[in-house]
Image 1 (cartoon, protein in one colour):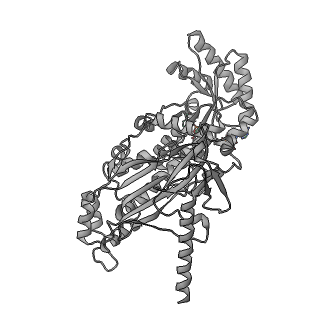
Image 2: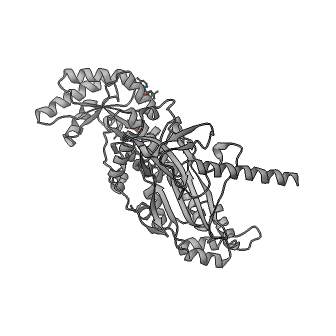
Image 3: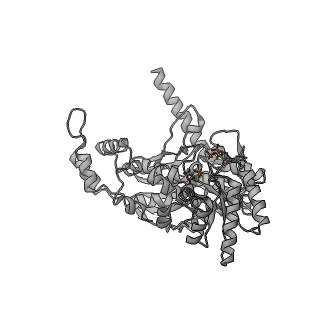
Amino acid sequence: MKITKDLYQGSLALLTDFYQITMAYAYWKSNKAEQEAVFSLFFRKHPFQGGFTLAAGLDYVIDYCKSFKFEEKDISYLREMKAKDGAKMFDPKFLDYLAKMKFSCDIDAIEEGTVVFPNAPMIRVKGPLIQCQLLETPLLNIFNFQTLIATKAARINLAAKGEPVLEFGLRRAQGIDGALAASRASYIGGCSSTSNVMAGKLFGIPVSGTHAHSWIMSFETELEAFEAYAEAFPDQCIFLVDTYDTLNGVKNAIKVGNALRSKGKEMMGIRIDSGDLAYYSNQARQMLDEAGFPDAKIVASNDLDEHIITSLKGQEASINVWGVGTKLVTAFDQPALGAVYKLSAIKGEDGSFVPKIKVSQQSLKINVPGLHNVKRYYSKGKAVADMIYLEGQEINPKGTVIIDPTDNARRKRIMPLFYQEEELLKPIFRNGKLKYKSPNLETIRKRASDQLDTLDKTHKRLVNPHLYPVGLEENLHHLRTDLVLKAQQMDQASDEK
Ligand SMILES: Nc1ncnc2c1ncn2[C@@H]1O[C@H](COP(=O)(O)OP(=O)(O)OP(=O)(O)O)[C@@H](O)[C@H]1O
Ligand SMILES: O=P(O)(O)OC[C@H]1O[C@H](OP(=O)(O)OP(=O)(O)O)[C@H](O)[C@@H]1O
Ligand SMILES: O=C(O)c1cccnc1
């Protein structure tokens, strides 16, 4: 994929928060820039009060890292930055260091289209502290949005129960880049097509669409508009029937459908974009069937989301195709996933990694320390639990316990011997070299659908889903608890001084 090259021409090294650059400078000044560190990217809670999250964005991350470089124009911009006293903000030697810096991290990540759960690492970055730090903001920017939209799309597609969902979001999306990334993530999440032609070109997503009210309004009558459209696209007519009077619109569509048939062509269907979609789709279905068009599709649109689709299905609406824009590409009911990127270990003087923890009053906010990884256990093709564990840790195949990092009392006994297991973090970069061959978008989309099939339906319901078990392996749990206690003791000791 070449999205950054095609759209932005060149490096995106400055697409980061200013504090990453100031920290980079300070790391360099305190001789810590090359100290090896490990960071982990994870989220704490499923979006949309759901029971699963669908990972997306890795291909953008790969593209970002491959072209990660401070180019001369980036350096010139930084060179001109002034501190409060009017002096240059950055030492020229630091800027030379940045200009020569080559991406050299190890990255392990969860593949796109994988279902993921809170607190487990989605991406792990190991390498020089300065590089790990500079990657924080762009990695979060990419993963947070695309994972959020892929998850929303998956929910909407689950609600549509296999019927096609056409993504119509471009006009209401968050800018140009938001729209493109959203179209890609929506396709991963199961949408059948996009209306965004550039997303079609860039990513190979099927492009589809109907026509707008303006088309109808530009003619004297609706019938003339349908006839002219049928003339232009005799094989692809979906008539928008609700500009004036929906049921009269259906009658006009039937008239033009009959005229097409006399020429050996078949209308594809109608679209309804306002009013009571259950009532109108059922009336339209009856009219189309009686007129001999049982195969004509009924497309519905108008601020749809997974909840309205579920409600319309509950009302037995006769809708076969769902056009969804605004609420999908803006993740309307939850505008951000809230994933974070935390330092989990740093190499000490003796060359071994020292696990690190960020303490918080809320156990939800205490990160998982150390160089950790995540395994998924399957039984008869169904995912049963995810275990977060320290890399290199032996796991007793006969039985072990995983402990929910947010609630010590939630524990689950696992018998690895009886399960199939999968390491979820896959090697992506080693020492800055790409080791992973990205699957094409169709493969990622198929992976998403297969992954959703591995989840029990209780985790997929839209309201109050059953919690999927994710926990820390016992040793990791103890390490985390010890580090928290130590940090609290240090805190108390410093208070007493
Ligand atoms: N039978 C139904 N059950 C539940 N929700 C519905 C049903 N029919 C339509 N809706 C949803 O209700 C909302 C109605 O939106 P709105 O108030 O804009 O009505 P409208 O008739 O489409 O108006 P407009 O003509 O301005 O578009 C939309 O989100 C639509 O998807
Ligand atoms: O409702 P959404 O889920 O965002 O789906 C996209 C909407 O965009 C169009 O409306 P718009 O009023 O922009 O133009 P139109 O004249 O084609 O209806 C379309 O008719 C849908 O209603
Ligand atoms: O093709 C359509 O019907 C379409 C495209 C974008 C937005 N609304 C509808």
